[in-house]
Image (cartoon, rainbow, N blue to C red; front, side):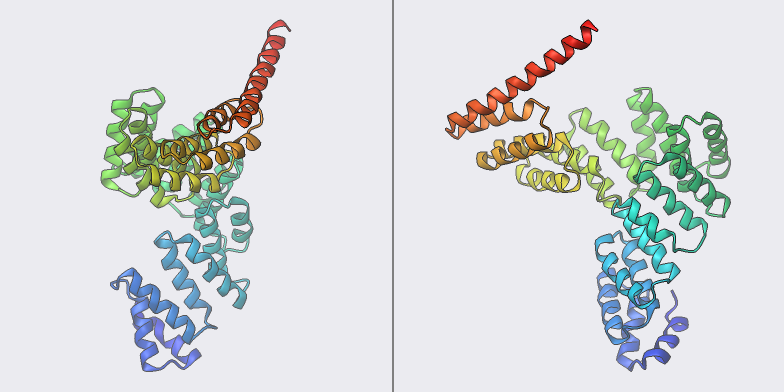
Length: 363
C-alpha cells in the first residue's frame, strides 16, 4: 500500500496532526516490521476511530500474518461503525474460517461482495461443516469467477475425491498440469497419490519438494509430520506438526498428534500444555485424553492424571480403557477403594461389549 495515496482521506476526515500522519505512514508501509506496524495502526485508530478503512487495513495485515484471534475483535469494532461493509464482512468470514468456525463464517460471507475470493472462503467454510457438495460448488464458482489460484484448484480436487467425482477430478488435474506444471500443489497431489498406495518413500519425496517451494503450506507439512510420527521419528514429527499449525493453528488432529509426539520425545511439560490445548479445541478426541493422562502420569502428576481420566470417562462412557487407566493411577495414589470401583467399571464395559458382539454373531 502506498502511503502517499491513502493518507489524504484520513487527514480530511480526522484532521490528523503531523505526528498522526507519520504514524499512519509507518502503519501503511510494507517495509516496516510487523510489530511496529501493529502499534502504529492501533495508534492511528485511536486518533481516527471512526474511519472504517483503518479497520480494513489493520485487520487485513493481521490476517495475512495469521493472527486471527487478534483480528476478530478489530473487525467487529469496524463493523459497529459500518455493519454492511463488504470487505470487513469478507475479512470476518476469512478470520472465522481460520478459527475453524465454519457456520459463523458462512453468515459473515453472505454479506461480502460476490467475488471469486468470497466463493473460495465459502468453500473452505463448507469444508469445515462437512458439506462437500456445497464446498465443491463454491470452489468451482471461485475458479470460474477469476480466482485462478492453484490452491483453489487443489481444494476443488479434494472435494472431487471426497464425492467420488472421478471425471471432475481428472479434468481439474489436467488443468493443474497445464496451468501450474511446476507448482507445489502438483507435488502435493502426486504425494497424496503415493500416500494412498502406501508408497511412503515416494510420498515423502513429493511432500519435501512441495515444502521446498512453499515452506508454510499446511498439507505437505501435515503429511510429513504423519509419516515421521509413524516411523517413530518424533523430533521431525514435532517440527512438521508445528509448521503445519502455523497456517492452521486450530486444526484438531495436528494439535493432538503434536502433543503425543512431544510426549514420545519425553518433553512432558510441553506435551501437557499442548494436549490441554487440543482438548479445548476438540473435547471428543480420545487420543488427546489418553495422551494427556499418560503425560501427566509420566511426569508423576497422578492426581491431575486421575482427574483427566475421570473427565474422559464422562466423555466416553462406553470406552473401557479410561476407567482401567484410572484404576491404575488411583492405585498409585493409594486410593484403593476408588481404584476397585474404576476397575469394576472397566470390566463391566468389556462384559457388555462382549455380550453385544456375541449377540451380533448369532443373528
